[in-house]
Length: 250
Image (cartoon, rainbow, N blue to C red; front, side):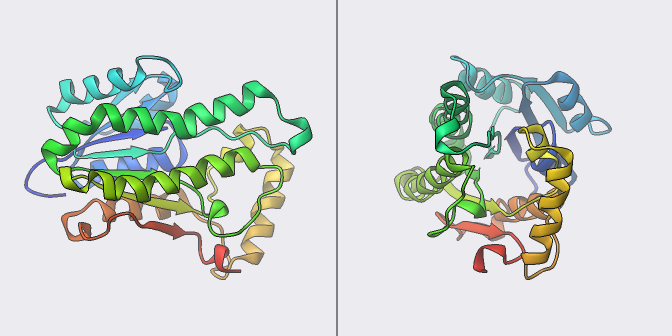
């Protein structure tokens, strides 16, 4: 990414967009700490790369932000980029919501980024670093998202944090940007409780509605995350970039 080896932290790095992002940064010459709850999936992300270090951590637990930042500084001595990608999703209309499932989404998708960025502030300021919040194009604008309200509200709130942090942290030399993926074929919905059949139907339906006539791949999102963190992207601040094949415009 530059003459200096950048140090990157990617949460939710065991699969999907997080895995693709970690590998894309590593291929660009950065050193990467991938954070997740499963040692097996993190090891799969790191396989074949000496630039990727796994860290098993549950971001809902007390002390997790300190553990993540300490691990990154111990391994790399710096943090240049923090990618808040970890998320939980549970489907259900208002009348079916379970408190535990709602709390898990709020804590992972929203509270974890708040306290992780807070803990990393000094390290990011020392490098004029960048925070990337991964949200969702489904929560942009005035769109509704039936059966997915809690997940959507966490992503809409994350976009608000992106805008606010861009202004609030600029005096410390820290940028904050967001990437809002559309429907990406990573199996995330299946891991969140959707049936295999329902997932295939979703992908086919979205591909038919999207101007680009396809759903996204994890690499489509990872590429943009890396570009926004390059020196050439430094004038982007506070923006939330929709990468969804134009779906949110329809």
